[in-house]
Image 1: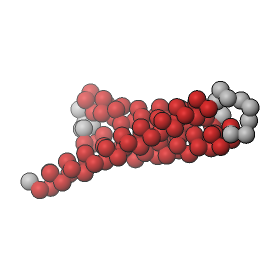
Image 2: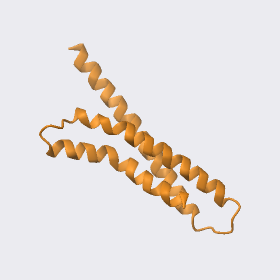
Image 3: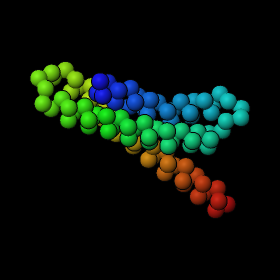
Image 4: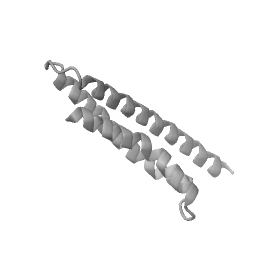
Length: 103
């Protein structure tokens, strides 16, 4: 159960930042800088997905069922990708704020 939940949370984490960016393109009152509010959500979902994937791999270590290891691996990969995206987005927002404040 936790393996598939880690995949779902990983997909949500990976999709959070691009969804906020797309929403900012089509919204008049939501700017691209406002999409930075999706970064903590993506990081939180990524951390939860990573924890669930670790839990699933630990639980499945002692079972004979081998099919769910792939789901835990995919959930872990998505979680790591989401965390990398959150760190990259945080760095880009930080540099943008630094450039705006220095002008």
